[in-house]
Amino acid sequence: MIEPTHPQLSIARQCDLLGIARSSWYYQPKGETADNLALMRLLDEQYTRTPFYGVERMTAWLRQQGHQVNPKRVRRLLQLMGLEALYPKPRLSLSGDEERRYPYLLRGRPITAVNDVLSTDITYVRMQHGFLYLVAVLDWYSRYVLAWELSNTLDTRFCLEALETALRHGQPRIFNTDQGVQFTSAVYTSRLEQAGIQISWDGRGRALDNVFVERLWRSVKWEEVYLHDYQTVADAAHGLDRYFRFYNQERPHQALQYQTPAQAGLHYRTSAGERVAAGHVSTPRRTQRQAEKGAKPGRTGATSRSAAATVLPCR
Image: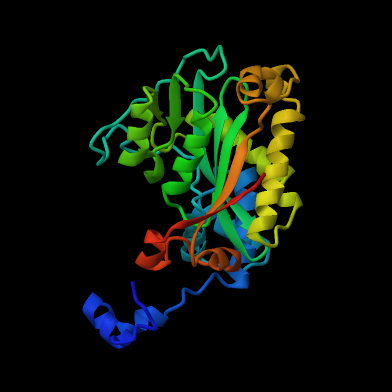
C-alpha cells in the first residue's frame, strides 16, 4: 500500500492519505522472549501429558520446576498456543453467534468404511526459536492422514488448502470439526456444502468428540516434534513430511489390528496412485522470518493479510 520510493509522495504524505500514523510503517512486531519460548515448550509437553491441567495447575507445576511465573503470564502463553484445559463448562447448551449451526453427527454412529468420516483440527508445533501451527485431515476408519499444512498464523487459508487437498482423495459422507473460527467460517462451511458433504461440529469444550485427531497430535508430538528440535520452518516441514509418510505407510496401529493406515485405507492408495499425504508450509509474505523468531501470529498488520501467499511444497 505504501511505496517508499514514490517519486512524488513522501512516506509521511502516503500515511496521511491512508489515515495511519507514520510510526506504524516503521513498526516491527517483537517476537516472544527466549524465556517465554522455553516456557511454551514446557507447557506444550505438559499439556500433552495432562490436558486437564488448567492455568492454576500449570502455574503450580512450573513453579515446582523452579520457574517464577504468575497465572496471568501462563494464561497468555496458553492462549497464544491455542491450548485449553479439558473440563466440563457451564451453559453448554446455549447457541453461539453463528448464523447457522451444525449438530454433532457421530455420537453412536458406526464407522464402517473408508471415506465415511473425515475430521480435522489444529495444533501448536514448537521450534527452537519460534512456533508454527499444524492442521491435518484424518480419515476416521483407516486413521490415514490425507493432508496437512503448516502456517505461522491462525487464519482460515491454510485450513482451506488442507481441505482442498483432502477432497482430491474423494468425497466423504461427513466432515467433522471443532467450533474454531477457522472451521465455522462461511467460506469453510460453504465449501463443504458445495461438495454435498454433511457437516458435523463438536460440542463446545468437548475435545473427545474429535478423539482420533487428538490422538494423532499426541503421536506426532511424542514421536516426531519432541525428538527433533526444529531450527527453521523448512526443518519442521521436512520433519513432518517424513513423519506423516512413516505414519501412513509403515507405522502399525493397534486399533487397526496392527495394520498401517495405508493398508486399512487401500482406497486412498489406489485412487491417488499410491500417493501419501500431501503437505505444505503456508506462510504469508513478510511473516516467514517472524515465525522463526517466535513473532506473535496475527500481528502482522493489514498488509500481510492481503499479501499473496508463499507456498513451499514439502514433497
